[in-house]
Image 1 (cartoon, rainbow, N blue to C red):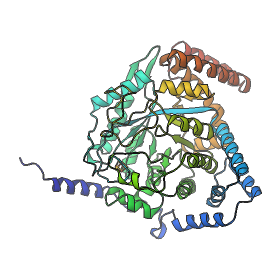
Image 2 (cartoon, rainbow, N blue to C red; image 1 turned 120 degrees about the horizontal axis):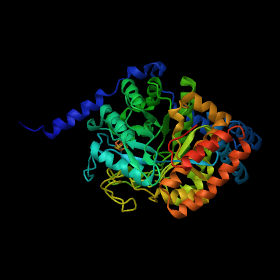
Image 3 (cartoon, protein in one colour; image 1 turned 90 degrees about the horizontal axis):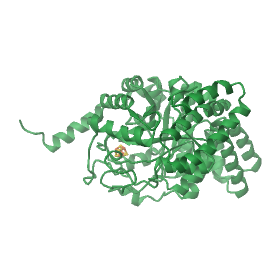
Image 4 (cartoon, helix red, strand yellow; image 1 turned 180 degrees about the horizontal axis):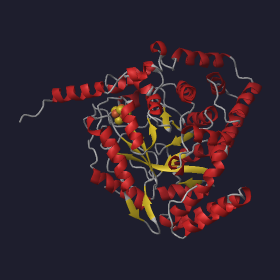
Length: 506
Ligand code: SF4
């Protein structure tokens, strides 16, 4: 038997990639073949706002709308984007922090990224996994290796949520993704008092077709996450040279297809540093508005990763749009105000000091003990050196989950390991309504406390446990004071968890 030549392999991969796009699936949402993102309209909004310095009263009216948990318009966001008065900015920061507290309380949800494979047919100029990076050590986890990874994540570190990450490659098709989800849910590991398992598997995967997305949904997918990277179609074409990912519209309408497939927890995002950050913030809002308009449900989460050093990724060196720490803070405040109900994800790309600041301003989810090399949890200590040859980019924060939980506790924040929402059907429209009304903040407090109790008993080091107990007692006191109707049921559940029962939720 003869092996295929490299040009045959390239051709097969290219035709596989091409066969995955079916523009008919998105035609109904693109009247006249036009995308919902109109770059000229976004630029016109920005231009108009730049020409008229924002009036303080108008800014305050917009803030009042955000405070009432209403999505802003593009025009309103453009106005906020051009506020330069430091005192008005301070008001915006204060309102953003207030909204975070109203909608999400003092909870931070944690998760771990788990890279399943680093093979990819695409050639994104900013990514270490791009097909033309011949220095990458490529591999895809076997199911045995995946189990080993999950045993560390769930049994040693104590994670309950994962975001599993796939490159775009025939070796990681939808059958494979579904098998990964099922394998992860099947792992159960003995912990100090109870047991560890992953209770929510979110997926960051290539844009799939509707039928494929239905299958992910059936396999128990949590949130489906696909980032547009940049909402500017022209820039998009420049940084995604011809490959599957070169099709801007197919990617842009991924979440439409997901919702049509019954997935109502979707995560959108943009990669900040590719282009003008103001344009991207407007693009994210336009995406949220579009999903609300068509499906009545906006994005479950928004991510705003910053471009990081990556191996053999020319655009990272060339970009003139690097985002400063100050602008990063602005991005968080503006997104919190513009889409007040949404979850906001900040990852270990950012160093600890930046994470600390942004977690106070509006972020609701972050990762701990993050490793992004394939097999990085089970084959090395979580603190060991990062490797350019094995990972997509370099992380800014490799602290353990234990260190992160302690740090957050010292900031007065409680880590929630709760995954009850989607298992009780609190997703999509239902969760949107709860978030908008502020009911979710109080409701989830109960589950946050129960899962925090579990984690402190099963996984925390002694210093973390001490810091965590202080936060826990404060939260329990608040439930007793402010939720008297819930207190008896909650207290009974808490006592059961403290005695070693696991996975009890409201
Ligand atoms: S960004 Fe994603 S699609 Fe692009 S090369 Fe990297 S892994 Fe592949």
